[in-house]
Amino acid sequence: MSDCLFCKIAAGEIPSKKAYEDELVYAFHDIHPLRPTHVLVIPKRHIASLAQVTADDEPVLGRLLAVAARLAAENGSPDGFRSIINTGRVGGQEVAHLHLHILGGPEPVGPMVKKI
Ligand code: 5GP
Ligand code: ZN
Image 1: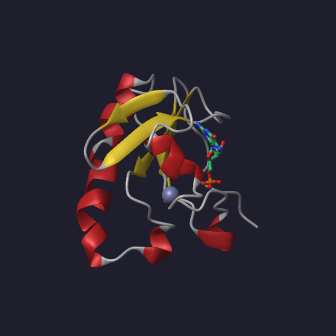
Image 2 (image 1 turned 135 degrees about the vertical axis):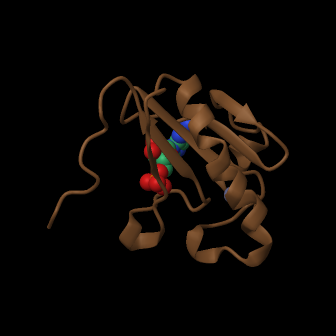
């Protein structure tokens, strides 16, 4: 997708602080970290959100999760981490390119979501 921020980041057209890259996924540090560790993992190929995935996306979705623990450990969160995928309006997704948040650090991340 030519007009997608995270496609441009994956392609190196917009700078980012890279944490990992392979043939399927690209990982980089969030520009506004919410915890000492805040890494985003994205498919290199554009997928708008978890609501748009198809069976063809299963390998890349597997890779997205498979690299998470290693990225957390390598970036200051060896004792566990929180992984979040926000989807659509209700999920609070702001960037329309599927991304996995990896949040952590030395201290527990805290409650999952606030009860309403
Ligand atoms: P969402 O709310 O869509 O799940 O999360 C989008 C995330 O992308 C936010 O945490 C935001 O800080 C991050 N973000 C938005 N624009 C940029 C950018 O240009 N560079 C980086 N590294 N992160 C970004
Ligand atoms: Zn994209």
